[in-house]
Image (cartoon, rainbow, N blue to C red):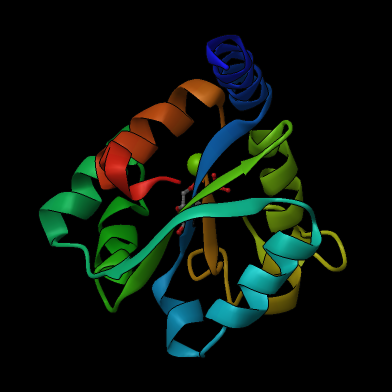
Length: 155
Ligand code: UDP
Ligand code: MG
């Protein structure tokens, strides 16, 4: 009996290692236009699992910290104001190579340049109001997930 439990535990750990995690944000423009369901549907249809999700509103300090990598860019102040302009939905997505896979589903930063059927092509309004965020590397995914989620909120 004990050995069966150990085997199951190890198999689960191996499976968790195989499946990566990434942070997704449904940004204020998309929440405002009631696109949460449509975006979640695209995520799930593309074999990514939503294993954490909550709605919140960023403070200006939160937005400045989250986007600190862009602090010297001309668009930084506008970006922080936009990201605090309404509620957002933050999500943890799980799947094989999910960081790259979700970036592909999102499409290019500027919706005008995004591929057909990507989230930004379908729903993005402008280079700023581009509907979604996704981590750009496994390392940043960990940092960004820790920014928003505690362990007990990820399933
Ligand atoms: N952004 C902007 N103007 C620009 C480039 C980016 O307003 O010229 C905004 C946009 O909302 C983008 C975010 O800043 O999603 C972060 O930029 P990044 O270059 O990291 O693009 P992403 O990784 O989101 O594709
Ligand atoms: Mg980025």
